[in-house]
Length: 518
Image: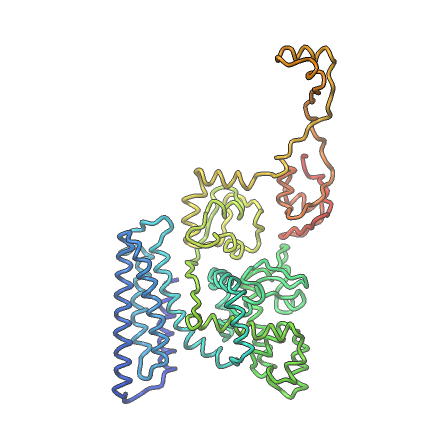
């Protein structure tokens, strides 16, 4: 992973260098500006290294120093791209040195002591490739997208919405995407498509929730309809799993779809997005009848439904913010998403793992990350020992610390296995006792006979008989019902002809319990 990051940095340097105009002679003013940027980069690098030392010494100020230095580097890279005579190769040398240090830290060389519980130093060093990526977005990939779209009042209105009432959704999308990026971005990269387009579509379609399903039947992170998905290789893979929910497969299909549309719609991102949302047939007809008009031309724009007219600028707006967050005062969260395999040492479910893992320095814990990285499994599905889940290095570390044994592991298991219905106490019918018996019992307890004679005695509850059917209540899942009646989820699904892996049920549905013990 780190070797790839270093190679990417080198390639990025070449790309940036090629993109910059070559100046044979600089004015004193330009040379002074270049010298100032070089000095700033050296100072930021020194500040970063000093921050790592503080982290190693358990100084809480270290994290602040490192974050600030990375932000300085991003600002300097952005300024360098715009400054005549500034060499991106020189600027990226600092990144390359830090990337090497990141690789050394990962291999155990000169690792600062990890004094905080959640592995702070590891998460800090993981930010370095992310900072380099931010610089790249401002140049090669970013400029590709910026040149393909219009930045107009409709897009600005979309940016306003993303930065106000929809800001939480944008932040959620970014966090979800960081975990999925390693599987999704290469599909667009190989297709020659900008990463910003991938992010923008996912932000508007699903907020990066892999299991998202619309009322119309669109499914997965890229929200493919069933028929369209089949055209691009998505659907049932033979095991009952719908690959529209697979991040890698859906990204590859989306990349193929957009390249197909761009090829028939004069390389127009806007029209291709309109086809993605409103139907490729409609988009092609509008394009043909308008003589190849631009999406923003009134005669073209008004032929699309209101939903599509809203969709196109909103996707572009999300992509724009992905490329230029700092210009809008948008601080995107840093996510340590380094991939790792998690092998279960005892049966568990994603719900149980979510509880025992804790927050681990994140806002909302790891349930969404685990679900997105393992789309074949339901959150409440119990997985046997030895199951290998896709995870991150942080998740694997927390699992070994909190989920294999100990109080938190036991508590998580208790909470997941708890059955709310068992809290309801059922009693049998009230049975009156003989008057003389009541008087005797009352006198023995020191109570007057008049009170005792009016006090009934309740019999022990009768053991309930085994039910043959069960009516699904709101919010229940098949796995929860199987646990309630002590039967296997697969057997229960088979008896009721429910398809894996989702085992979809709805409130009011009657299930046969023939496979259950009662």
